[in-house]
Image (cartoon, rainbow, N blue to C red; front, side, top):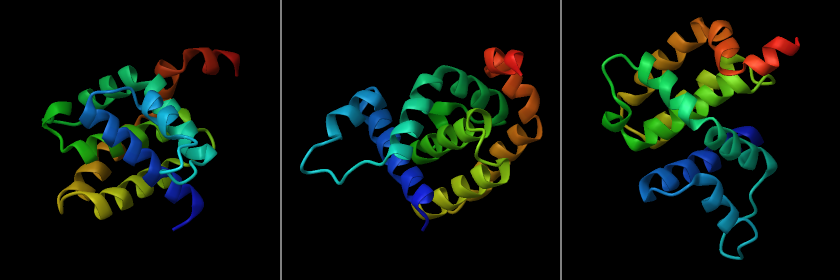
Length: 147
């Protein structure tokens, strides 16, 4: 597992725990960084947790629109956390190709969730990637206007 893959797994761990406990993921992360009981947290993990948290409202809107027949509350919590991370990388991480964001999300749910989860996550993120440029402009208007 590469360093970015490990960072994604750690980010999902934080996002999942925060979701389950009903707390802010960045606050949870800040409480853990530097703790002697927690292994060091890498920069990419921190960037992912901060990015997902900062854009979570918009991420959840997009997921709700494209997860045909599934509300966020109906999704397994691990899938929800992985989808949030994958969508963040699809729409906000310019250095991550869409195919990589989708593949990494699918690999995470293969390891962490149900047998049906890889197909579900691949389908949702694949639909979103298909209209990624249009969505990117709607979720990041300030960045696309400057280009």
